[in-house]
Amino acid sequence: MITGIDCASHQGVINWSAVAASGTAFAYVKFNEGTSSSYPTAAAQFNGASAAGLVTGAYHYAQPAPVPIGQRRGLRQAAQSPQCNRRTPPTVS
Image (cartoon, rainbow, N blue to C red):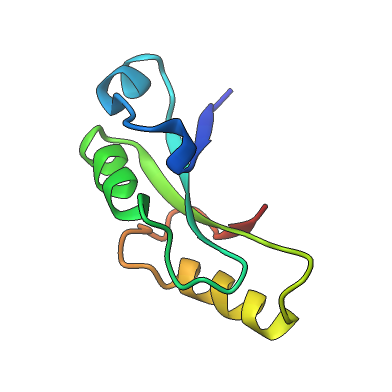
């Protein structure tokens, strides 16, 4: 079985070397939420996971209230993120 994690800013600083050493193969990073264009810890989490050898992916955290077109824009931004190495599909949480 291939294992992975998802992460967001509420996890704080992540020890990516320990995550990789545990056998975790990939990490999905919260890229944005609602209609926001980026999430404050996304770049650091992408860089840390990649440096530890994990495959990275981006996820958009959808909110029920904002306009659907803005949500679609958020998912597209996650998919086109330069930090997302395109080996995993973007996803919605």
